[in-house]
Length: 506
Ligand code: BES
Ligand code: MN
Ligand code: ZN
Image 1: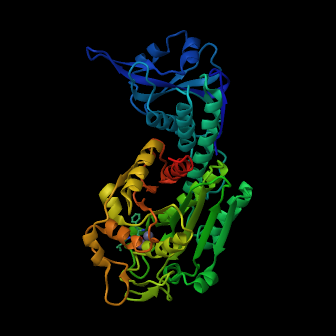
Image 2 (image 1 turned 90 degrees about the horizontal axis):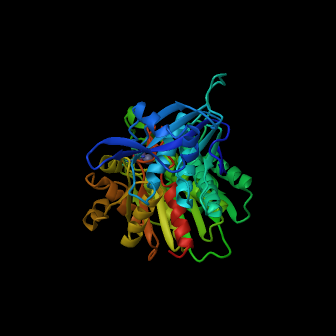
Image 3 (image 1 turned 120 degrees about the vertical axis):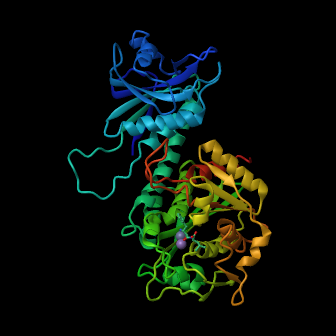
């Protein structure tokens, strides 16, 4: 991963120095550009004519626009890279952290293959510096794949230096460190999602959790892995039932972080279907193209918990990763089979492609036994979610205040989530003659029906929210802003911030 550090001097030796440029407009409607704070030293070395040079090159300052200029004077970087920050903020106001993060990301991505870049963007306070550092680290990420080594292969930007000369340097340093941990967690989730299912399956996912935790060397962080024997013995019929069609047996991973000063306990549950073929309710083949990403929820709760532990946030977190491969093997669960879930409820499987809710149910019951103050689940649960909200995630739950809090927290971290209802009238559509519940209900409102199914497995009185990240988890188009192609690491930033806010008594 790209390394990150701080500097006071923006003019040091580097492959590039990145400055910010705003789009301006006079009262009479004349359009132009203005240099953003942070660019002063670079502009001085340019003889004070950097803005004019950008103007002549046709720069407009629109968000993410990149303009390259040769360096001059005291600037020891090879080139100056101007990145658009969009509309100039009102006098006395800084740029929004969203625009800053996205611009830093676009610039960092364009510097793929380079050794070192200085980011002389607005970074006078902790919020701004954190946004720049986050953008750099998220934008520089690209999955390297499993390829034969090539001499001219271009890795991510090796070294990023954030230039900041504001008054509050201690707070700025802390913000950059935190950005490093949180962005590292997002990139870990991305790596897991991008890893092919030949390499990442329940057993290897569980092993990866164990090695990451060992490498972190945090005593307050412990892992417990239930393998297929322990799952069968423990009565985890949902996870076992979905896993039984695969030659690769399922796992339930429990990752616990405990802080001596914690006043709140957050439980997380993640969907970890390492590949979703649909089972015997087989998907059409092109619908499987992105189904290695069906473990994005598990990746998110794992990575977020690791970040919370690394940051020593004073809160307790228990994360469950429900891991299985949904395959149509000879032993696979069939349509109209009835399975007994952890906790004793029975479920008739009327569509083996609605597997996520089944593996999540076991883990929700188990997580409820820990008596958490808040229970959140994260899952790539329904195609209906993608149809409704595309790349925004959906938030449902049994507590409107919690749902609002999650949507607001997501916004503050630069993630996009939207509240969705759990309409009572749809509940009866998952009733069935043969069991307590059917895993299939009304097709209309399919995302909401899945949420209603999960609600049945949440312990009484526990505030719970369900994040359907089906559309947000994987980007099968080109990179944009701080989002790469492939696994996105959706929900990690929101989960970390929620844990921090809970710890802070918010
Ligand atoms: N993993 C899918 C949902 C999904 C679809 C995630 C597209 C990301 C992109 C899930 O297991 C699934 O197959 N859901 C079915 C449920 C249906 C059979 C009730 C769906 O949404 O079609
Ligand atoms: Mn499915
Ligand atoms: Zn699935």
